[in-house]
Amino acid sequence: MSSVAGETSTRPPVATVQLRHNPVVLRGPEPEADLSPGSPAVGRLAAHYGDYLVRLENVDETAREALFRAAGMVGGRAHVDERLDNVVVLAATSQQIEALRSQFLAAPAAQGRIVEESAAAVRAFLQRTFDLDCGGQVVSLGASPQIMGILNCTPDSFYDGSRIHGDDAIARGVAMVQEGAAIIDVGGESTRPGSDEIDAETEAARIVPVIRGLRERVNIPISVDTTKAAVAAAAIEAGARMVNDISGLLYDAELGRIAADHGVAVVLMHMRGSSADMYDGAEYVDVVGEVAGELRHAVARATDAGVELERIVVDPGIGFAKRAEHSLVALRHTAAFRSLGRPLLIGPSRKSFIGAVLDLPAEERLEGTGAAVAAAVAGGAHILRVHDVGPMRRVAQVAAAIRDEGAGWIR
Image (cartoon, helix red, strand yellow):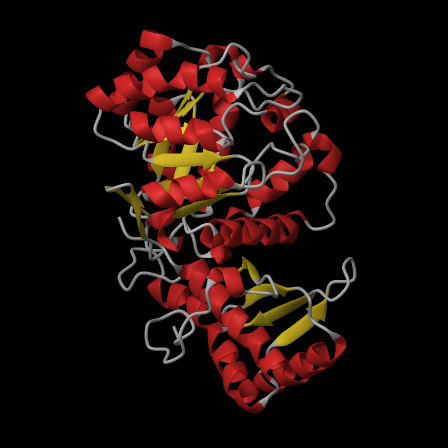
């Protein structure tokens, strides 16, 4: 591989939050391991000569013409996405992207930036491992998929089999750790479509005793699933070391500062609207590009609030402000969200898109969840948020073994 994907480049990577062209690697070759029991020569050739398809937006006419000419000169190609204004897809190998970078050294800065961002997106796409610091507890991500177990301390979550309270919730959390969970996510407010918001005092009262009880019994990071700064602060005081915000810091601006001040990890999920009206915003021309772009803004909100980039996880929000077809497309293109350069969480567990495919209620969606988890792992998801920890850990383990064999992922 050339220096686009390796460590030999002399040019610093472009920070995720500065990529104004929202570069997204829609697909591309994965680096092959040096020793593969399959066809190593074929694998290396594919990784070396295969095209990366990089989606770029906000490309004006002048820059587009320059990119088209330069791409043709180095053997690559560029295409206009006719569905959207100023969106271009660059098809080029890693060597051709390096050649483009050289060609644009003397170009106007705005044009050179397009190629630099393409290279940065490819580097992010190929990054495998992260050490996520959750308030002093480090979770290694990438060597194998990690499971986040769901504890819904609510009376109205969409899957009634997940509703649990008090000591029973603590016991279930302990059991999840024994089944292989690396993180426990505790929530006190239902965010199912159409649900109503509750006040911070009620939400905190449901989860703080559970978090405190878990903190005394388990030695893994506990996450609080909330959109409210006051609830997050109470949960962190009780022992939470991660904040999982479905709004991506849109609902409560103070939440980012709370997380930053306490040095905890933050999961930023993609969402439009509120739980009550999320489907009003479920209109997309390009699901993958639009979700990735909105997640970039969420990352910027977090870093502006003082959250360190190294503590941020992104989540494309399967099932949130997305109809079944949108969730299926986003899940199929899991790998594209690696372009954001942050660990990737996918939460498909028993959701309505599975029901739409199988015509089954939440209680009968275990196998469908397993299929979704396997697809997410194949795309490079680092964390799987699920209700059924033991079965899904086994699904993820086998899916990762298939993905990893000879494909350059580190076990």
